Amino acid sequence: MSNPFENDDAYLIVRNDEFQHSLWPACLPVPAGWTTVHGPRDRQACLDFVETHWTDMRPASLVAALAGDTARG
Image (tube, rainbow, N blue to C red):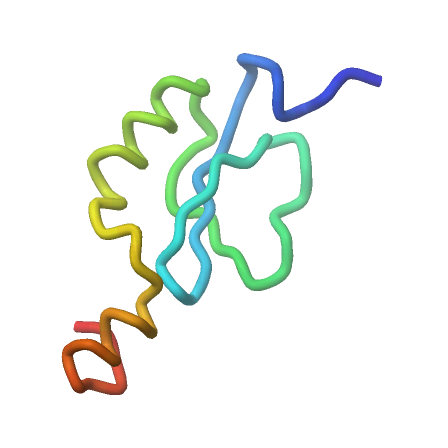
């Protein structure tokens, strides 16, 4: 069986509650705790989405803690 993470077919961008993004093969079920925010699209389109939409790599809880908030704005 080939590795679904190493093909150029359809991918999704999934995001968790910490606003962290991940490239995910569209042929696999989205893991619990993650939500689809883009796709299915080709790999490069998904990578472009991540580059423009995930500009702060810090987890949302850290951003909130540093801001003295309990929620991300």
